[in-house]
Image 1: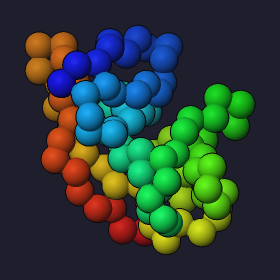
Image 2 (image 1 turned 180 degrees about the vertical axis):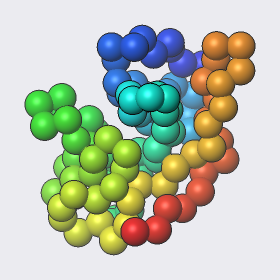
Image 3 (image 1 turned 120 degrees about the vertical axis):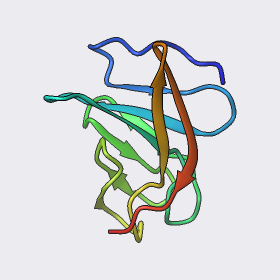
Length: 102
């Protein structure tokens, strides 16, 4: 999988390489990396990161997710799916995907 490094200041980055995952860093002690599906759980549209609101938004029917993929508002029936994440030799790897329930 190809991609780019995520700096401490960059909280959200798209991963290139075809799996459609979003890497979301939730900083705290310890910091947590989440790999989220970019596919809305309502009707399968692609969500995007809104820098202004600091949320993921679905352009099709107004679904809104927080940085961890939980539904904030709109019609999505459940959170964004997650991918297993591991960091090996400084490289973030994501996959396989699993479903998260409310």
